Structure formats: C-alpha cells, structure tokens
Amino acid sequence: MQLRRTDILDAARELIDADGLDEFSARKLAAALKVTPGDLQWHFPDRQSLLEALAEDLMAGVGEPPPAGPWDRRLITLAHRLRRALLGLRDGARLLSGTFVTEPNTLRAARTGTRVLIEAGLPPDQAAWTVLAITHYIVGHVIEEQSVRPKLPADLSGVDDLNRELAATVTADPARRFEFGLGLLIDGIRRLF
Figure (cartoon, rainbow, N blue to C red):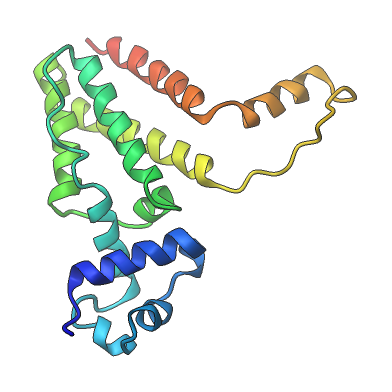
C-alpha cells in the first residue's frame, strides 16, 4: 500500500488528539502507520514541515468569505471559525502558534479578514494589523482554553474577594470569556473608523 500525504496527516491528528503535541514524534507516527521514519520523509522532510502541513490543514474553511452584512458581524464570524478550527485538535492553538505557514488556507483567512476591514474603510496596513491582533487574541485564548487547569478548592470561603474573583475567572465558561474579549476587540476596532 502506498503511503499518501492525507493518511499521514490523519494519523498525525489522531496521535496528537490522543497524546498531545508534546508527545508527538515522527517515530511514533511511523510506528502507527507501520512504516519506517524514512518513509515519512518522502512527504515531510522533518517534524516541523509535518506540523506546518497540519496547521495549514486546520485552517481549511476558516477564510471562506463570511455572509454579507456589517463588517463587525463578518469579522466575528471569522473569529468563531478560527476558534472552532483550533479547538478541533488537541493543542491546535499551540500547533498553529508554533508554525509560520504561508500556504493557501492560512493566507486566505488573513486576506478575508483584511478585505472585510478594508471594505469597511480601514487603510490596508491597519486592516492587516487588526486581523493579526484578533488572531493573536484567538490563538492565545484557545491555548489557555486547551491547557490543563489546576484543581481549585471546592470551598473558597477562606479566600479573599480578589482571589475569589480570579478563581471565578479561571473556572468561567470559556465560550463566554471568548465572547467578552472578542467584544472588547470589536469595540476597539470601531474607534478606528
């Protein structure tokens, strides 16, 4: 059976989902595929190139043009797509942040967001910087969302008010925290117009 690129990426996704990004290696991937590590090098010369291909694959569909409407709704749609894509793979945000991919899916996502803001009236440089800032927020949020949480004590009655509030922040619904932060960014972008 000939080893195909899609088979390698699918197996890599399964291993990362099962064991996490830190435990992922070409040797483990080769063993899962029942091939030698050298067989993988026909498609991916090293671990980094494989991770870049996975990151590019994660971005598929993120940059499709959002439905017509106001710029802020369109940008919010793109932000949610990116978050969902990153949450679709264990350590997906760490994977993306550890690569610098300039392939079609990744570039399409950046171009689509930038185009939305240019059409709304921002100069191209500010539009691109804004998309980069939103992307950094989303990736950072999802890294935190996908990280292992410390166990908090069930009884916080002996904890001062500030620490109790900080504990509540850590345990709050990640989707609600994401919406709140995204809303702050969108409100800030409105000031640019």
